[in-house]
Amino acid sequence: MLEKINHIGIAVRSLDEAIPFYRDSLGMSLEGIEVVAEQKVRVAFFQIGESKIELLEPTGDDSPIAGFLARSGPGIHHVAYEVEDIEASIGKIMQDGARMIDAVPRNGAHGTRIAFIHPKSSNGVLTELCQNVH
Ligand code: CO
Image (cartoon, rainbow, N blue to C red; front, side):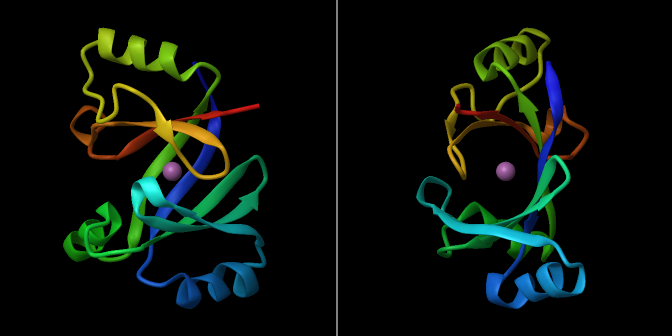
């Protein structure tokens, strides 16, 4: 059902302050910066092998990332697994009794469809299912 790790999301206070470490010190390729209005975040993504690192900056105080930063400070926010058929994956997970935050997929960065599993069902790790739209 899961194909690979698509990306790891890292909450940061400021993309401008965080990007130089990943781009210059770690030498990762900055692929783009995108605002995801639906999630109230600005996302910078770096390609690393088959996966990405996504830096998530809140675009307002009501952003979920703003809440995360206030509670926990900067750090790993979620792990995203790539799936072929997100509806089928959601159905299987819910059938097995796990809790979804999103029972219906929504729009993610760079043309993906995403759905979050509740961290209570995934050992405290906010977990995203992510389907590329071809
Ligand atoms: Co994500």
